[in-house]
Amino acid sequence: MNDSVWDALWARYAAAPSTEDRDTLVEGYLPLSRAIARKFAGRGVETEDLEQVAALALMKAVERFDVSRGLRFSTYATPTIAGEVRNYLRDKSTAIRLSRDARSELYRMQQVRDALTASLQREPSMMELAQAMDITPDSLLDLLDQRSAADMLSLSSPASAQEDAQLLEETLGKMEQGYEQVEQRDWMAWVRSLLTEREQTLLDMRFIRRMGQRDCAAALGVSQMQVSRLERKMLAKLREKMEQ
Image 1 (tube, rainbow, N blue to C red):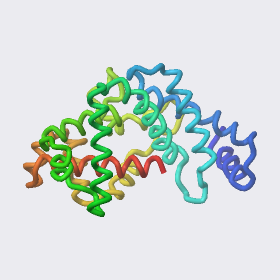
Image 2 (cartoon, one colour; image 1 turned 180 degrees about the horizontal axis):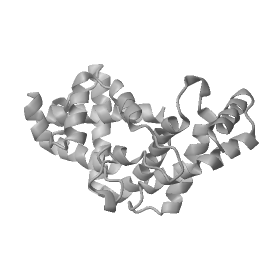
Image 3 (tube, rainbow, N blue to C red; image 1 turned 90 degrees about the vertical axis):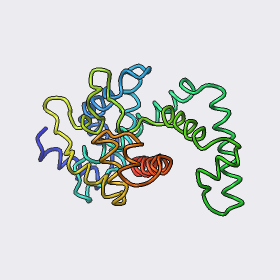
Image 4 (cartoon, one colour; image 1 turned 180 degrees about the vertical axis):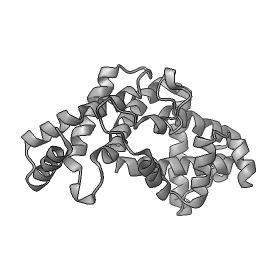
């Protein structure tokens, strides 16, 4: 279908949603969801399973898409679908990658963190949490790094073994032939608009210039622990926005 036909279909579905029109839209955008799913291949999960998760996310995206906002559907749906696949992989990988001792320590950390938050009436600092757990700050960072490795596919994760030189956000917009390419500039501009100036600087250093945490800490004039905390806060914020 040409653009005018798609526009008419979206307008009709927005005015009076029907199962028939929804299914037509989903079928038309399946190449998009499949392309996104394949970017996460090679992570111990069958590609067919990833495509199924992506297809379900596509259906949700069609149902929730607001035509009146003036966005292209592909621009809206790409982070939504990628987020669903990422969450699926995160849930699959957590039990596999974390040892029993690490899971036990993470559970204890959460319990201590909750108790400190209740008593302090605020989020505890890294130092306070480490002291309450009777471990060194470095040990706490190691524990959090293990959780990060298992709990989320970061923006800098390679999309596949053959593409380990490319970042995921640089490849999501490359869809199958004949399908409209997602505008990466608009997407990255939206991502940056969610961040503070300091977070934008860290995003550039960590995920574009590929600098290590120590180098970032030296450039920002802070400790490596502060860089690690800021990075996790930034990624958590972006993940929350993508899921929304």
